[in-house]
Image (cartoon, rainbow, N blue to C red; front, side):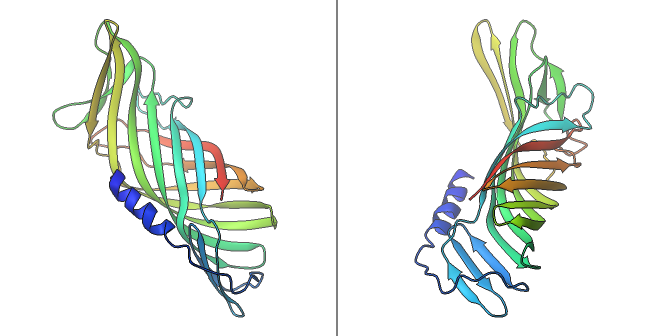
Amino acid sequence: MKKYLLAITMAVFTVTNVSAINDDNENPGGWDFELPGLTVTKNKTVREVKITLNSSLSFGFIGGVSQAKDVSIDMGQSYEIEWGDFISGKARLGKKDFMRIGLGFDWRNYRVTDFKMFAKDNRGVISMQDYPEGTEPKFSRIHTFSLSVPLKYYHYFNKNIFFAAGPELYFTPYGSLKTRYYEDGEKRKITSGNVHQNRFSVGIGAEISIHHIGIYYKYNPFNVLRGSYGPNFSSMTTGIKVTL
């Protein structure tokens, strides 16, 4: 997985030998196709290629929603890191409004830090169990990696301030489990892959940005784990987004 993501990143950032033809993007009714470092624009009067940096980096804290008994996601210890709009396209609706669809990478850690831990049995079913007797808990977490596809409406109040909101589709091909605790002063670790994460889900997101720095909120009503393989819990996220 890491090698695959590195290959994609290197391939995209090799797109550098591009020069500007025109810089007028005030006209509505066209579209833009964007990669990090590259924008291709087409509208009724302008065809342009220009060097830009079109993506975003987000860091947020995750809270559990609709949690099953004994599941208590610690929002202070659970977090999301997202590289958004790695690839994107947008259709301009007016001088201050457009729709944008993108593709990004999303990493999430759902941690519990009380006296319960995620445990996986021989059937692959995950449940909440007590830590082994006489041990000192540290944390237990479910980690997921997703491809995110947001479709958002953007409104610019001026060139430095905008608001955006819309649905977000997630494809989650990877999930893992890790638990850490101390036993007789020694660190212990339990890990497992294939946690039967919910591979497809849809949420909503909103953000407001001022001078490339903003705050965002996401809500995803779908369970993180498939219902027959783990306890129910969904999520909401709030954090900071830097638009590049």
